[in-house]
Image 1 (cartoon, helix red, strand yellow):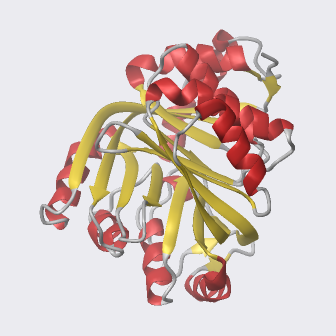
Image 2 (spheres, rainbow, N blue to C red):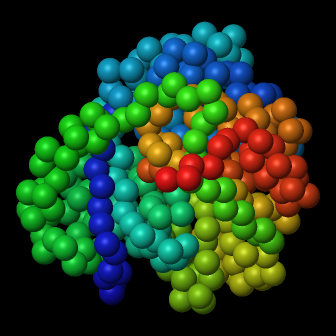
Length: 337
């Protein structure tokens, strides 16, 4: 399989992941997760959320520093009053490759490579620049070698070269995490993308190779994929959400059917994406809560959300786009620097 040339690879080790499944409450993300974490000043290094159906069932996954993991899980559990399941996964790593340029083949090759080495995928989220995957720390070294087998990183000839350059950088990244003390949160920009379809599929780890082949095939058809997340369900299945431009339903269904057979593929048409960029959005407490609460006040329902690196990506109904932009522009302040 031909390697894809990318610019870089980032690793964040020694983290923890919390996954919570909600039986049906549209305020679950704000009241049950984002608000209590913000109140206790817990930094999030990764966040994803998917609404599963019209009843409001949803799954949320987030990552924190390892030392904050168990406390975060207990906090979320306490605020949900026993209505949700909360699963804790310790000793996790986040691997981010960039740039993906909305190419589904980048995520497809990532899935194919991890599945080939039987490395368990614990989650995925994308930003406009990067695709981040969650794996066990015990499998991190194998995952990095696998990524070098799949991708070409011109600045590094081998994993050894990358490790030599990476040494010490993780501690530096942790030291520059900003404190959340702004009365109005500064951002760089709000970017919108409309006329999208949101697709969802639920598969097991053994089907990741086939799903990778689907995304590789869609990439060959020159389709763009501006959003992707994957979350572990309570049944240990992976719930994937993807966005593709509208008007390609037959192509997408045909490609999925040819590789994944009768696997159920759900589609939500006429959705829009909003990308909010800001300093250290991926690791500053309270940012996600500010955004989710603002949309809630504006009457905008989230269909899906992903936060990784320095961006939050939200998927909403296209009819809510104008209201969402107005609400967020009133909530955040664009930075002049």
